[in-house]
Structures are given as C-alpha cells and as structure tokens.
Length: 104
Image (cartoon, rainbow, N blue to C red; front, top):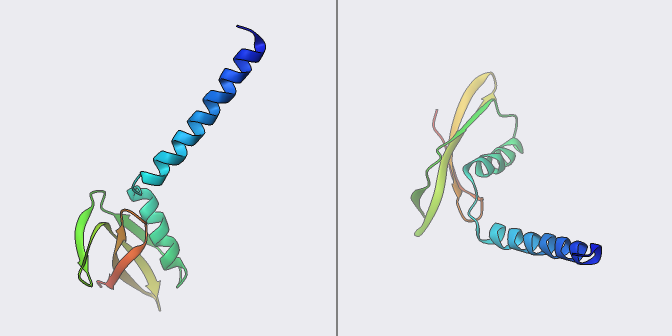
C-alpha cells in the first residue's frame, strides 16, 4: 500500500469515527455523573455546596402532568451556619433540573 493510500485510509477512518461519535452523543442519554455535575452547577449559582449525591438508576417522575425519566439526587448547602439538604430530579434526556425540594 502506498503512503498516499495509507494516509487517505487513516483520514477517512478518523472522519467516520468523528461522525459516528457525534451521532452517538446526539442520541445518548445523559450519564448520572454528568447529570450531577449539571445540577451542582445550577445550585452553585445560589451559593456554595458542601456535599452531593445521585442515584444511578433513573426513575419515572410526574411533574405538571408530564412524565419524565429522571435521576434523583441531592446537595447539601451551608446557609447561616446550618446544613440544608435539597433533593432534585434531573431529566435523563436533557440534563435539566426538573424539580427540587428542601428536605431538611
């Protein structure tokens, strides 16, 4: 095989791999780790976070008459010297926080 053919084959392989990766990412659901990261970024806009967790298995959640598949998680924040805990749901499809509630 000539150098030109090898370079063409390698370039074509990289291009096909890149396109395949883009297609997979477009249809792939969000991972629990990424969902937690996005939720933490949302909560950090209102102040620092001292702890967080996420349940790895999606649950069905109804909100405003709509059914979502979502990860359930939580964060702990220190407000005025007191730890306050919040639970939240993150949509599996979009990564958006679809609801949160203070639990303690």
